[in-house]
Amino acid sequence: MLGRLFDSFVYLLIRVVCRIEASELEKVPRNGPLLVVFNHINFLEAPLFYLLMRPRRMYGVMKVELSRMPVVKSIARRWGGIPLKRGAPPSAAFRRVGELLSEGAIIGLAPEGTRSRNGHLQKGNPGVVTLALQNNVPVLAVAHYGSQNLWKNLRRLKRTEIRFRVGVPFKLAAPERVNKESRRLLTDQMMKQLALLLPPELRGDYARVNEIGENLIEKLE
Image 1 (cartoon, rainbow, N blue to C red):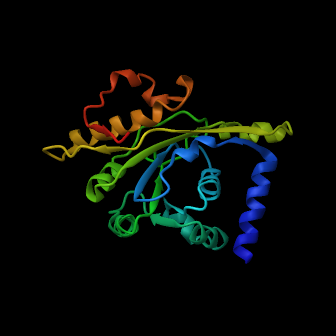
Image 2 (cartoon, rainbow, N blue to C red):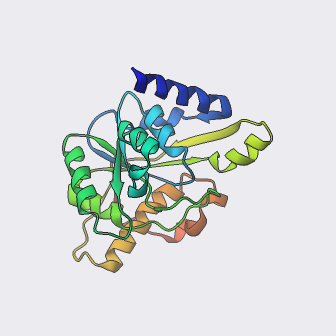
Image 3 (cartoon, helix red, strand yellow):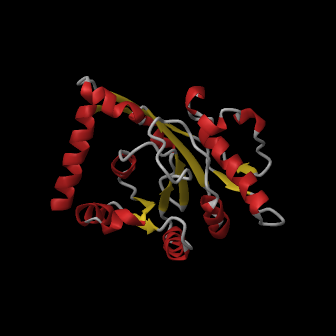
């Protein structure tokens, strides 16, 4: 009961300070295993995805430091956080993700690894590619933008407009040789799907998105 009250309070608070356009989230499959990749702007993503994806529960990979903070730890556990230590072998986190996917769960990951804060898309890390290939599950790009203006708008007592855009589920083709080069190529083609959902001025490291191929992407339309 306390957890549900907390969720309701957070949802109401976000709705007070933000105007959210999330109708495209209806495109997210309602069942079956899925890796959702999204751009990482700030702390708002955790509550937004958890609350807006309901009734389907979305688990998320998070940095392990958050699981060591007393209050945040409890919230992260309730919101399905999976701790991952950056720079260390991710075996435990990856095993947990694999278990959840085998049960038909939806897992959210931010391939950039760190927050951009200004909303500009950064280089993706190949860990998501490894998870997608290991578990042979669909990947879905979900972009959001507007929350980079949150603090500026709060100072002006202005609501922040946040918009979500959803792509088409796809699978990554397994390369003949899995090495650094092939993993980077797969990562760039995956990130292209995310970049195309963002306004051109927010594509950041993928501004030249049209120069990235899609030969390793199989759209599941």
